[in-house]
Length: 325
Length: 246
Ligand SMILES: Cc1cc2nc3c(=O)[nH]c(=O)nc-3n(C[C@H](O)[C@H](O)[C@H](O)COP(=O)(O)OP(=O)(O)OC[C@H]3O[C@@H](n4cnc5c(N)ncnc54)[C@H](O)[C@@H]3O)c2cc1C
Ligand SMILES: Nc1ncnc2c1ncn2[C@@H]1O[C@H](COP(=O)(O)O)[C@@H](O)[C@H]1O
Image (cartoon, rainbow over the protein chains, first blue to last red):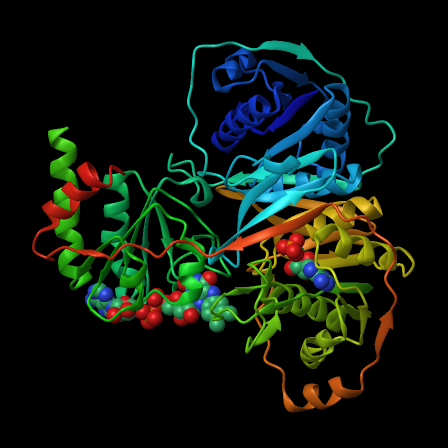
């Protein structure tokens, strides 16, 4: 028996959301009295290091067919590894890769899936219940997995990693993909965030602005604030719709759902559809000139004031803090 | 070109959420239901754009009870040739995916389109499951889809960027923002929707893999702490020493 964690990589390096998944998987393994095994594909990294996050063993697949992301082939490879490791539970990060793989593996193995999990399983009364957000963060559901084999995809930023100095044993695993004819070809991979800031779903600090900014020309101070903090920028839906900001910054019910440690909302009214994407943030700061703005009800800290006056002062205050630390 | 568009029925985005039966069931009383926005705005409209340009048919499919006919007609009012409702009464992802995959296998669709997730159960599960059950590629979180000469080109969102992929043969795609502009049904569409064929199909057996034990509403948020707009130093100090997020 074991818990298998699929650890996704970018340029051969294991992603932060996957490190969280490994750590989570190791905790699931201790609950079940077994070991955590990480599965990594085509990486030249020092994989023994994954022991730090709780993996006792790492299965390493090296296969040219898996050089680009093809969920059909990769799912087959993961299923074979899970079989060979005798995995009772397979864990993914609930990110763009995990969402494609966990659902496929669930259907393939007829194993119950909880996607976007935010807690460790509760084993009371012989159940295997995992909590997840539903109704866009307006409620939680405790979902019982009824099948013998279980699949969990873990919400990024919901299970902080704790590193030790343990190391893992690394073993090669070879997957047989000869029976699958995939017609998918990846033509281009474009990751624009060369600037070094975390992409929105993984970001711990987010500075977001809405229609209160009046026009795209006023975003300079929003970007400055984000820069001082090392934060990622986001925006409300109308702002992306009118083209003031790129679509990938749109957060909310119909955009991206995020759960950073800090979300600073500037000139955003706090409509229910906006809140649906950001209400899982640990701390919310709202800056709005209207004291009646609904966002204040969802905020931890509020500032009633004109963004054009408040934001420059806030930038200065952050700079002072940085200088003194 | 034959396209199947999967639509689900969800509570309107402004719905106040509550539960009944010892917190095991969503309280549908006085709830306004809509077509899941990703399914309607992006999947359905893009399917219509493709067939309007190069010919073909769009079929809408929903797994659910007879109550759902109302929202199926709403979707038909936007466009599509016909609809199929699989008369199932579970919204568990594997159950739904099995129904759609079994039906789709017999009909020779070129593309099966879903939304990126439902806004009620937030699974992002059904599309991938359909693809696995059909043994075809799955492109999730696609923001563009173009079809030419038997080859489809799609952009799918990944953390911090996008990937461009090409695929031939049947595939499943989950759609998000960027695919198309939402359409508002016109009078002609609404009238036509009333008489478009809506076929009801009996469900096939599917194993139940999960079950929701309880729903919980999050604890009420503590009152907001107000900070004077003239004292941003205080706000920064609070974030540093009290909230400890910076
Ligand atoms: C089905 C559906 C899905 C939706 N999905 C989303 C979604 O995913 N994400 C999303 O964001 N929205 C979504 N919306 C739209 C949502 O309902 C709101 O319309 C939108 O969030 C409002 O954006 P806003 O707060 O930027 O603009 P507004 O509502 O116009 O608010 C602007 C705010 O700025 C304040 N302000 C103005 N000037 C200043 C100033 N100088 N200084 C400080 N504050 C100022 C105002 O007091 C006001 O509160 C959706 C709507 C529907 C119907
Ligand atoms: N009951 C259903 N009937 C038809 N399609 C569905 C149903 N439930 C979900 N879908 C489709 O699957 C997508 C993803 O749903 P989910 O996995 O539940 O987040 C939705 O956007 C729909 O396109």
